Length: 313
Image (cartoon, rainbow, N blue to C red; front, side, top):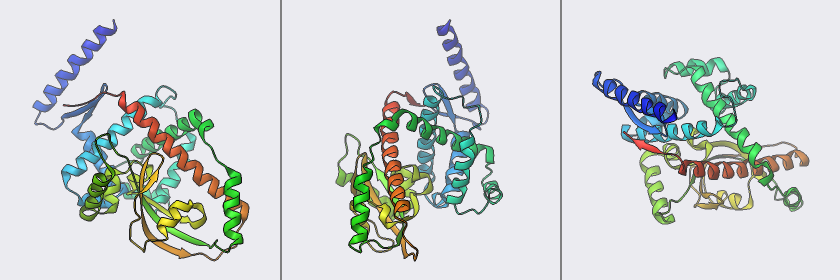
């Protein structure tokens, strides 16, 4: 019975593919991720979505933007396939509303209405965005549920580091506005070659567009933007590299557990405020947790991607 259903599905796919292409080539099947079809319409919509998040993507060659959109769709479909094993994706997710609020604030919109109005410029509806936010929220929840016992935070060590900085008058209320590119090496790549490719891309397309292309961090959709982060939240390794660069300069690649990190210093400022030790410690702990969860998320995604069949049509 299963074989018969599968055969029928294949026949339908071939029929629609032939007829859609025949019909003025308005709709074409571009590729498949397992059994899910991706058309040129899907890619065009994804391109509008990505440009809405990072306007500078509109400046890059169309062929490059197509690749970015395809990669974004592939990642989304692979995650969705895994999420279907654990969640009913048709149900509403209350946490998504909170994530959505942070989402539009990260894009510097003051209200949800202002964000919705902005999306109309790209012919994108709020529902489309909310589905993406819900999926990403559920993905993060799944990663937390499955791997929370692998998170290792040495709170005593972080406490000592913070105490040492304060006692040595090294602690300042200094904030950095940063962006990042977290990249990985494929089996046939070496660091110098990959780094030269990324630097060339930054020179030609800009940092934000290069982040969209090469970064595996969740920040990639926002052009690698992290925003303002306090000095004491950074590890000694990151802080050392950032302190060596000037505004709009890049750090040398910093080795991370799941790749290499390039930081761009967008701006810095001195903030006059009293230091609450426990609050600052909690920020350090949360920052370290997020970093470890992102590392685990990337590793897990790459693992399931290897078992996914992706075919160009």
